[in-house]
Image (cartoon, rainbow, N blue to C red):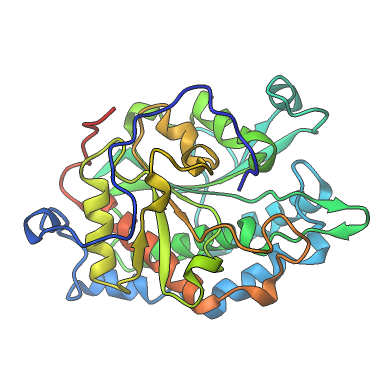
Length: 348
């Protein structure tokens, strides 16, 4: 997650802060696809495993990747690993893009305060929807971190190695469903963005140059740090959810229903407080979708003691909790991809 950002403008916050209470049964009934008796869903859901997340994270956040700074050889090496992962699953790239890579030019970043960063790339994998392929569900996470400083590798296992492998694992689950004849009705774009730590550059480049029209983009579910806990929630089964009702009255309801019917984590809305001094709504890649009127939900574990330090390592990840949070995002995405109508955008 980006350490500091000063927003150009603000979006009105229409929600209350604090820990979630589940929505009423009447509201929750809007979420119809995610039910425990849905064999197709359950089969795909079970594909999300703590051991598989751990296996991929031990590669993505290894010293070999050199901290994955934007455009660095280590980040490119991590990108190759991710692309090969998608190829092995049989998940292709958007046809309009022509490859898994969307180049983010150095000049684009430099004009936005990116200094002398080299060219970098977003990585895009894509599963086409069976009934409404023109409508796009985006599941995003940044795969860059802050690199190597004074000879010390900042591995970024949580920030955002955890989100990177979660996106990969969710893709595996959807592809499993597709192979079984139960692919998503809407298309799913798995978007790994670069340059987040320096200024949300990769997501800004994508939303300025979308492969699919933003008018057809239903939602962005953004995952940035979901493998740890913060001091306020030590030992709890929780996740912060940020921005889920700022643009749509339905997204928070759907996410809460998905949560209730699966792992029933404690959903914490503290950072939706208009007086949040951390201003986290503006500090990760979902914001570039939100400012373009695309509903978003940002999944986050909080600011812990190893944030942006060389001690953010794979050994400190809670893999069972990482799996549960990944399952929540998958379950929410499953509903959004398969419900009869796309969610409304009814708030500003």
